[in-house]
Image (cartoon, rainbow, N blue to C red; front, side, top):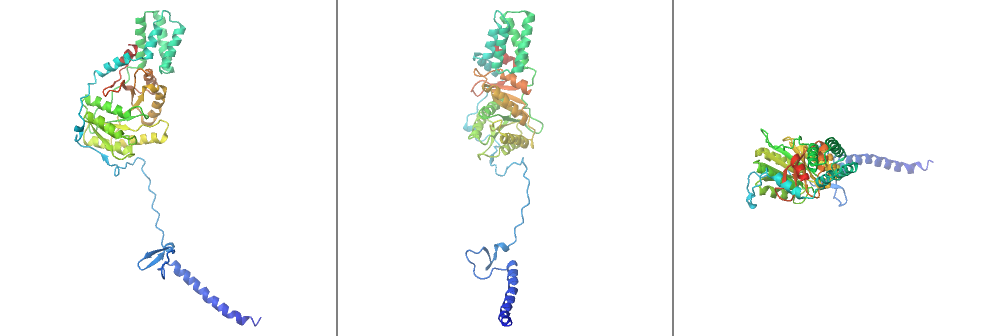
Length: 405
């Protein structure tokens, strides 16, 4: 044992010296002092002046505070919207004079009379029978349902007609036709307010949004409606908030140019539609126009994200001015599917009126009644053709007269 001690003493002394150096080296390393010696390509060193500091020794950057994004914020800085302030450039397309509104319904009525409308012809044929029994009433009911009148309005109309025919005991076709006309007018409801809210306010223009699903003709409807307003001596400005469909903005601008109306649009595909709508209303206020009309992108009524975006467009616009009119464009040929669309859109943006397009021989006229009964929202405008002036105010009596020829 005594022989081993002399051998262990030098070893223990060396360990003491090494043990004292280790903490010093660790302390120097943790202090973040300049990295000594030459820099190896594999060393995690960021050069500072002549030396460098180990990356792991550098203090971490403080975390950026979380910023809550405003869901209704509009990106005006990157919008690059074209906001015209005069009529420059409109001379590229000859400015047309729209036809007066007064005679439009007459022309549309003539077109509807000539079309093969099942509703009017079918009802008159049935009610002009020599004998009006239960079988006839069943067929009348079926005809109305096939015309998309809806179950409740159909039962209401059939019950009223049955009672009147029974009480009067009439079989005269002209008398029966007069009774049918009265009941149809009553159910189409001429008491509904079908006027467009297009009167300028004291300090701002009237603001109108046009909405609907893909393919119903919203942009075309906005263009045709611009012609209606110009024919009534209104100063109009258009907002091309359909930023997703290729060439939608150019299509709208062309409609506007044809009647000398300016269009606010973005040259960036996929720009924020709320930003374009905001700029359009802002320009309308600055230029003191009477009406600003905003065209929106088509969207399926069952796509939640797109419907939320539509809500945003309306909310953002209302930071500047209240939206006076929200028109839903429906394709009359879609029948009950159009009714489902109307129901969903009314829940999202509070629809104030319906524009019914393609109300020709392929359409089922009863959809007018079904929509109004279901939503309590009036049909305000109808279209019966592809012509630029084939859009007219809806009138209950004129519509029924056209159906019954």
